[in-house]
Length: 90
Image (cartoon, rainbow, N blue to C red; front, side):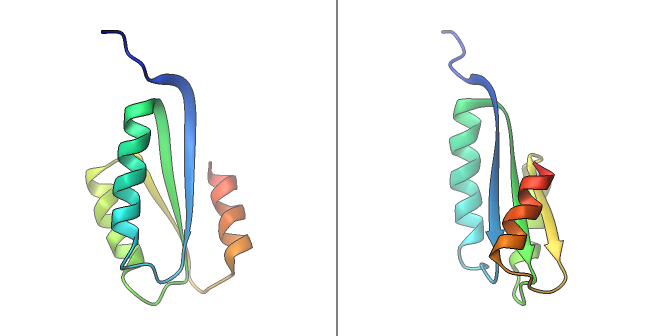
């Protein structure tokens, strides 16, 4: 059966602020979606100064899934800044 994955690449960007309850499930769904459809992809999470365990959850996930990257703002800079930094990283 021929490989049906697209030759195009995909960057998925998630701005995140205090998302410890949601981020792992979001990463799992996004990773499995992209893995089935794209030969080349990355997931970038911009942790925008979260005070919870968002960054640690992403780091743990990235240890298992190498196409996941974390950018961290030491303090909250807002949604626009998080999106912009994700776009620059992509």
